[in-house]
View 1 (cartoon, rainbow, N blue to C red):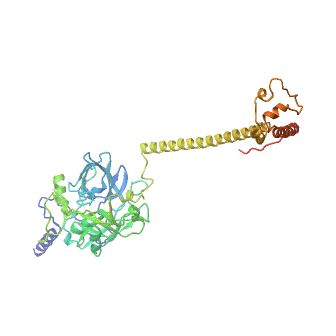
View 2: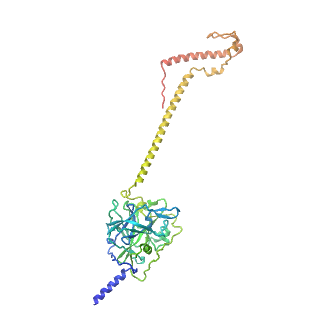
Length: 462
């Protein structure tokens, strides 16, 4: 009799420790953790966009519902230019692990609902709800740690798929860390954290990217530890980088980066309003427990939304840091056609400029040939012209005016009528020039005769 009462008392004590305050919540067994490296009993999940894995981890609840960071989704700007709408052309799937590395399955997302208070600039309320088909898979439940004050430790976890095939999970990376030593610096770097420290967890922890070991990226999720029990508590939200010039390269350059994780407990009732059922939450049944019952809960949104001198990034960091797997990222048909068209345009422009350059060179050769040809022709013609000084001094007078109708000059006689001299006192000088010109012409004729027998050669450079 005493043994029976003792067993009943132990059972009542355990149920009081593990039960949820939600009266209608289904009863599920909770896994006890004897080692910080033992996550084999939990199902982890990773978001894929268009079949390519992202760095965004998923907080599973049931086999059909899960939380994800809202900035992991793709958006388009609406016609009014001020609000965002989901890009419906993006296909989302959720890859779920079975234990550490085995694959439980990949499920298509049928519905995506960002929190209506999500602010894409400050990343306030950075959470969304996914609904996906179970595809005949067995039912399961993952718990959300719902009361932060009782967490005795935090497990920072990074899950990832095999980069080559997305078919299996890599061994998770796990770090146990509960320090708040970075909180002051985190608040100085990010206004959202300074106003909402109960909603966010911040530190400088990071782990190597699976695609580029030189790029240190944040962990994907945080598990809260209550005694020996563990449940998922937060998802990576965003990072603040000191400086605007480095941009995404800062994740691969050793810069000080503050990483922020959004705590899920205050968004449980918002998720319940969409699911239409109770959410699986975990906490100890103690009098101090409180929970946020408002489905419209919102963080305080800062103004200005970000700190001057800091750049804020979030979402898929495999894409942001430019270290995504080449095997996983395939070019679409439109992208390939655009590349081919661009190459053809460049080749056409190159051919045009080469043709233009060759034409200019050819035209220059023709101009040089024409110039030198004209030069030699003019030089040849100038040999038969009278000397310039003779032409300047010679005074041409009509013959009838100089000599009269009865005066004549014998050809080549060298003589001239006295009446010519009386009309032009400078004629003796002109006769002198005339003789010199005739002598020069005779010498030139002799030179031409010799040049015809021995023509000169000219070298023309093109």
